[in-house]
Length: 243
Image (cartoon, rainbow, N blue to C red; front, side, top):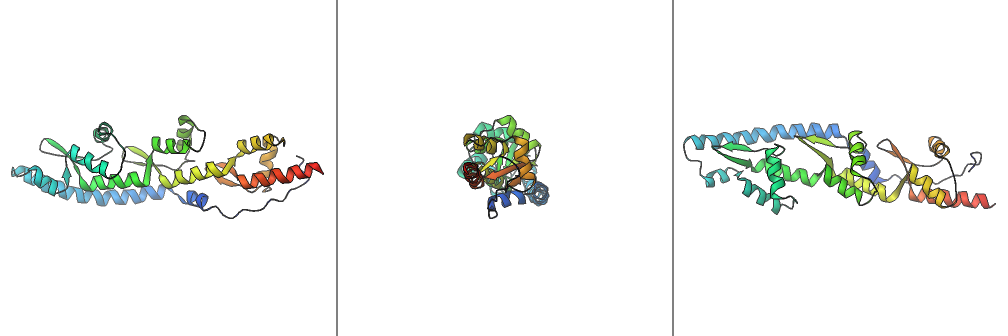
């Protein structure tokens, strides 16, 4: 594939999924989350104070505490299951023990405020845990867990730490699965070219990308070529060689 003859490739329209991924800003999410938590825990503090006052008056019956929005572990887990969150009772209890799910103590018993529970369910609707994100992406891309964690640590996969737990926006994983289904990375592009009888060294291929001769997207520090673009390149390069 000599560099002297330039093949013109069609420029593709903007990919909305890629644009959505690029707009995800962990710093912005973190700030919004901080503001949300401040408001949340002010409201929770009011509920807890009322419950503690009832306890001092020996009027903290289970019915009254539930009316204030304070659930026992069993009641909270039942609410979570009904909301559609897939989690075992043991794992749910572990979240409380590790304080990734906020709880309060009234008397000798521990309760989970309904406000906290609702917020936690909303987190599950907007974010994946690291393991959930990996399991979802792995269905579309051949990647091991260690490599996935590496991408999270290098911030090529956006994430945010909330409390003691790291979360990954569902929108980010949805976009990354779209990229995995519709794009080749550099290594995959070279492999696809080779399968079609077009040998090219990696540095020569990357020079074409550097010069803008092959339309591509830069996502998380890596370059990706649309499958349609690569198919066009293979077709035109193969035709050129037959002349």
